[in-house]
Image (cartoon, rainbow, N blue to C red; front, side, top):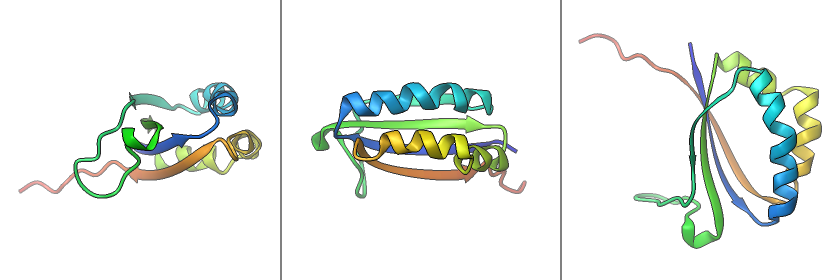
Length: 105
C-alpha cells in the first residue's frame, strides 16, 4: 500500500539547503519516491504551520511504494550522511502516513 511523506520546511540557509536537495534527490528517486506536491508559498488555514510570513517555506508531499520503502530510505546510512547537509539550513517537519482505505458503508 502506498505511503506519503509530508515535509514542511522553512529554509534559513538557501545555499546549504540546495546542496542537501541535490544530494537527496537521486537517492530518493532510486527508492521509488514520486513528488505529488511541491508548493511555495504555504498558507495555513487553521492551526500552526510554517507559512509565507515565516520566510522561505516549502511544503512537499511525496508518494512511496510502501511505508517500509519510505522508512528504509529515511533510516538508510546513505540518507543519514546526506541529511547532515540539511543541519543548520532550515527547520523541517517530516510526517509519514500510510494510505488508508475506509471500510465500505
